[in-house]
Image (cartoon, rainbow, N blue to C red; front, side):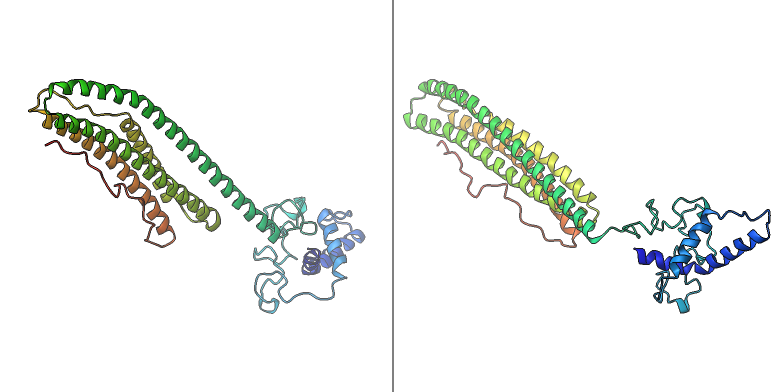
Length: 345
């Protein structure tokens, strides 16, 4: 740093000597244009000229502009304004003339002259850069942790809600089955009675199983979305990539997942009663209950598939960010085996 200031002194030495000679001449021949008291600029030049005496050698490119002095039209132009320092009235090119500038040699405009500035080019030391990178990683880690904690909290709230719904539904199902047993007394065929009761039980079990499956799918989709978000944050922070499209896709996926959660919540509290009138219409009534369940589950499946598609869009946006088109497979919305209630003959 001090060596750099010494080099600057050499570069402006010619001006310093000439200006001092002129000032000394002015003392012997007073002129209204030249004050007998040296100006601030002259004092600075004197200091630089004194330091120049201690310099034994200078480098071949004094102003660090990439052009060797022997080929440089302005070899002592440290602020790259087209003027050598010996004629430049604003050495640090900050728009303030040296005579009015408190820091006339502040080339990085950080409020410190180069002779005391620990970072003359204001680009930070490698230590600072490393510290900033570490801080950025720590912030990403904290953000990711906060997101996961929020996800865990929302999942617990959803699970508690489902448990409450199930508890309420158990009483409703118990009442429904007692009523069904009473209504089936008018049916003479005992085998049909048993079959209807079995189908009624299977309908409730199937609904519970599918609700659990859909909930599991959403859990996996949310976990995938968290990973996508973390990678997008990393790409933005460490590589400076534009992740606006990824974030937009993530926001849409969050809305789709929330919609699917709401649909599952509603479906959790449903049960399907089989209407019993006559033995002749019993089969048709059982079919209606099964169809109602199937239609409702199809609606839930569709909103879960929409959530799955939205998460996939976010994954594709992230992959395209890195120039890739392949994405990880998402969890299947349909269970491997879909049990169906026993039919009534």
